[in-house]
Length: 422
Image 1 (cartoon, rainbow, N blue to C red):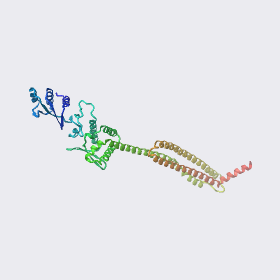
Image 2 (cartoon, rainbow, N blue to C red):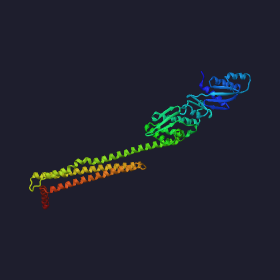
Image 3 (tube, rainbow, N blue to C red):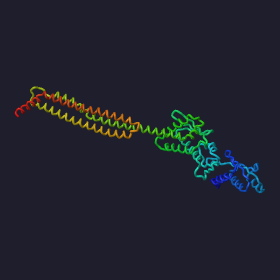
C-alpha cells in the first residue's frame, strides 16, 4: 500500500529543488533541464498523481514516457512542469498563508497538516510551526470560541464565507470572517487567548462571562465598518481582551461588594435584634409596676383604728413591695449587663471590620451600620434607666401610702416609746 506521508515527503523534497516556481491556486509551475534524475523524480510523482501537465521545449507531451524517449535520443531541452498540489482538510500544500485563508473554509477551519513553501514549513516533519502559522491557529481557536453554543452567538455559512452574529441585550453585531496573514501577530493573539481562556474556562458565572464578552465585542467593534471588523479585532485583540478582563473584574468586585454589604447588613440586624431583645424580655414584667401600685392602693387599709389583721395585711403589702422592687432592680441590672456585653462585642467587631475595609468603598456603609447599632443601644439604655426610675417612684409611692396607715403610725409610736425608755 502507498504511504501517504512518504508521498508528501517526496513531493516536498522535489519542490524544494525547483529553482523558478510560480504558484497559481493549487497549481505549481516550474522549469528544469531534462536529465535522468529529473526523469526519475517526475516518474515517481506521476505514479503518485501529482503531475498535472508536462511540456518539453514548450510543447505538451503525454507524460514521462515521452520524456524517456527524449532521453534515449540524448536530446537536451527544458521541461515545463505543472504540479497539482494536494488540498484537502487532511493536507493543504500552498505557497503562503493568504492562499490558505482565502481557500474555501480554511479561514475558520485549519487543515490537519499544513505545508507552506514560502516559509519552508513542512507540517509533517517540523514540530514547531512559524509564529505566523501559530497565530493562524489561534485565530481558528478564537472563531471556535465565539461559535460555541454557550457563547450565545449565531453563525451562518454562505458562498462568501462565514458570518458570525454577536448577540447583545439590545444590539446585534455582524462579524464577517475576513482577514489576511498581515493581520496576524502571534504574541498579541497568544496573550489575548490566554486571557480569554483563563476567564472562560472557569466554571463559575459561565453565562455572565459570555454575556460580558458579547457586550465587550459589540462596544469594541460597532464603530468599525462591517467588512473590516474581524480584521480589526485580530489586529487589536489585546485591547479587546484587556477590556473584557476589566469588565469581568468589575463584575467580580461589584459582586463581592454586594456580598460584603449584605454581610454588614446581617451583622447590623443581628445586633439590633439582640439589643431589642434586652427590652423585649422584660416588657411584660414592666406592666407589673402600675398593676402593683393599683393593687397596693386598693389593698392598704387607711382606717384610723385597725385590728391586728389589718396591721398584718398592711405590713405584708409593704414588705412584698420591697421584694418586688428588689427583683425588678436585679432584673434590670441583669439586662443592663447583657446590653453592655452586646456593646463590647459589636465594638470589637466594628474595629476588626473597619480595619479590613479601611480602603474599601464599603467603609461609609460600615460606619452607617454601626452608627445605627450605637443609636439603638443608647435608646435601649435610656429605657432601662427609665424603668429603674419607674420602680423607684413606685416604691416611694408605696412607702408614702404606707406612711398614712395605722400600721406605720403604730410602728412610729413603738419606736418612740423604745427610744424614751432608753
